[in-house]
Length: 150
Image (cartoon, rainbow, N blue to C red):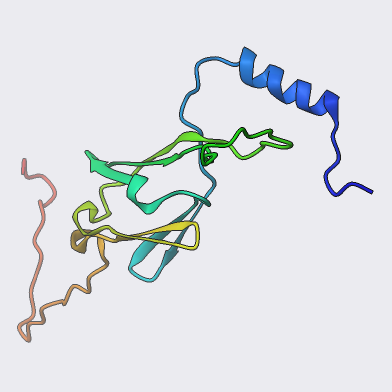
């Protein structure tokens, strides 16, 4: 019994989709985003991507992540593909960041096929306690009286 099964209709359908689709646009990448304490964490699934191909650009509160996956090379021998389902090419994702985030202090790490971005909350957006001054002298607040124009 063969390990890999060949389904000609599925492969013809996949080939037709690739050939008839529009020019290859950057592919999206799956992402999770959550807040942990004083930072937001964004994780992108990018298996098989070389770390050198990653490009992260922050400009005007827009964060752009790009990655490139090259096709498998065939060390000088003729390759006869049985199944080729892993997409190659450019992968891209843009995020609109709010003004409450510190774009200048973003940290990025790529490990085990996952790109993790840590985006801290900006200092001016963090909650602050405001102290209330106290005075021992009684104060009277005067407002306009009846019959006056003020």
